[in-house]
Length: 46
Image (cartoon, rainbow, N blue to C red):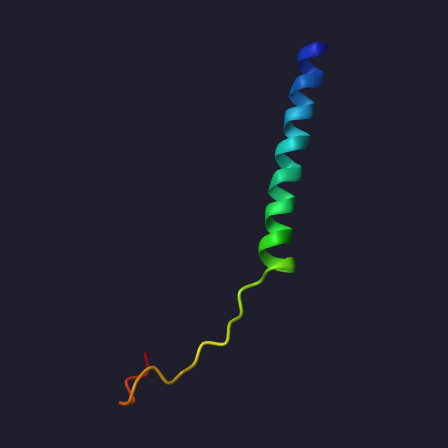
């Protein structure tokens, strides 16, 4: 019984950490995707 409670608690904690990481990465602090197509003086298309 005690092992099941500990195991369920660890699973819930791991899921919360993963969810918080994803929310922070993609919702709260998304990287701006304003990549300029002009990378230099020549039109290399990089």
